[in-house]
Length: 162
Image (tube, rainbow, N blue to C red):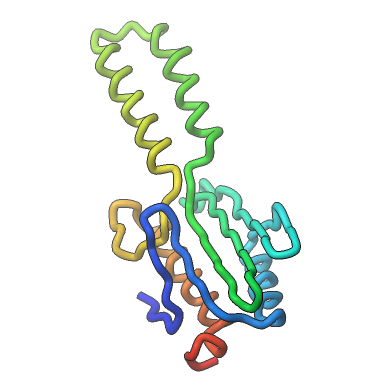
């Protein structure tokens, strides 16, 4: 596990960090995100949204990261998420294909599928908490990567060593 000099809060639905940063450190962080294959999807004067696409064969989940600047203060929040396309696709498959299957327990399967669908909607956002063992390697891997990335770029300004 990576020890961080920057305090990352894992809130259950997203991980976040607030810190002081210069324009140069902000630009260095944005460049580091691009090197990690994040794509800039929206940019404003004080708000940037990055996404990292699904890497299904690598066992990776899509990631969304939002940077908001308030003066010299940066609020960075990031989370893994279940894409709405997956949720809607699962719902359509349940509605369209389950009636065609000759299954004795179809009502039970339907109720279980609706439960999974509800859980997918409820748990759409997933923080990078290192103690969430049920979500497996991608979550732990990205917790370590984001911790390392934040430390490399911002540790000198957050009171740690550069």
